[in-house]
Amino acid sequence: MKVLVTGGAGYIGSHTCLELLNSGHQIIVVDNLINSKVESLKRVQELTGNSLIFQQVDILNESALDAVFKQNSIDAVIHFAGLKAVGESVLQPLRYYHNNVTGSLTLLKVMNRNRVKKIVFSSSATIYGDPSSVPITEDFPIHTTNPYGSTKLFIEYILQDLYKSDPEWDIILLRYFNPVGAHESGRIGEDPNGIPNNLMPIISQIAVKKLSQLNIYGNDYPTPDGTGIRDYIHVVDLAQGHIKAINRLENRLSSVEIYNLGTGHGYSVFEVIRAFEKASGKSIPYQIVGRRSGDIAQCYADSSKAFHELGWKVKYEIDDMCRSAWKWQMQNPNGYPETGIAI
Image (cartoon, rainbow, N blue to C red; front, side):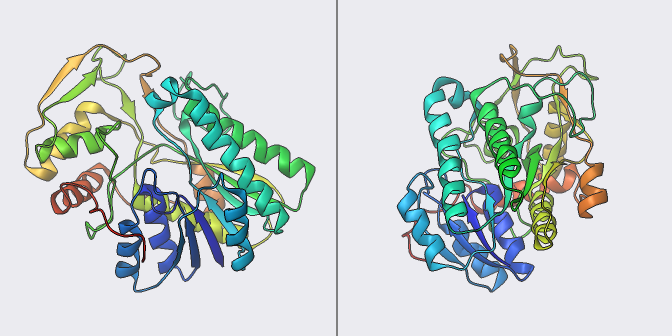
């Protein structure tokens, strides 16, 4: 298939582009490069030995996006593009709603106009809020606690309503848990702008002495060691989930399907620290500080639906995630270099 990947230069997007090329798909990437660098796509091409088409386009720019569709015979879309920092979304809700929701509406209008009606949407486990129990299945109650999560939920609603209005659409919603790690080569990985928001890149930057210590937000949760438990999933496993979804879209679904993508196992903050120290041989200094508003005790997935219907299962465990994250950070202590646009 010829697949358009929005936000394809980002962390999850670049790993998915690599797996798409390795699986024989042709890809066109659109990305505004606000939170990503085109160097990731250069390295994807080097690693796969295959080429891709890149257009620096913001999905809010309807005419530019429409031109991409007019110039390419696109079969399906994987939609990653969006702002993604939870804390920032609380401070800048209008920016998040405009970028994520309006951008998605623009994309869907252009898709509809060009009769491209197959889409895989990058959703999030954030929409489950604070679950009453674990593991979380796809039919759990939905409750968001921040604007970022709300944008993901609203886009899910939009896609479901779109299908009800026009059953020609084939839609897969993938609810991610916590992606970490990097490609085994160490050539592509997570390169956050500024100070990272997520646990693994913070730990990685502490190990290379870019940051001094980790703040652990609360050690009094009702968990075995008092720290929050999350379902960390290797980014390559997550990328493979998108390959399985695209393969399913090759045969007409005529439906909206929802899948959790997680390992089904939770790791506490202390467990992640110990695994990273083992992988890196570095000590990770930390301090305990107060809980953050909106944080929850534990969250991990039941991904059996994806296993049974997509044939997807995870290959990597926490030690693999930490080893690959450390390899990426060692080889790229300052992330991707700034390079020109041409690839």
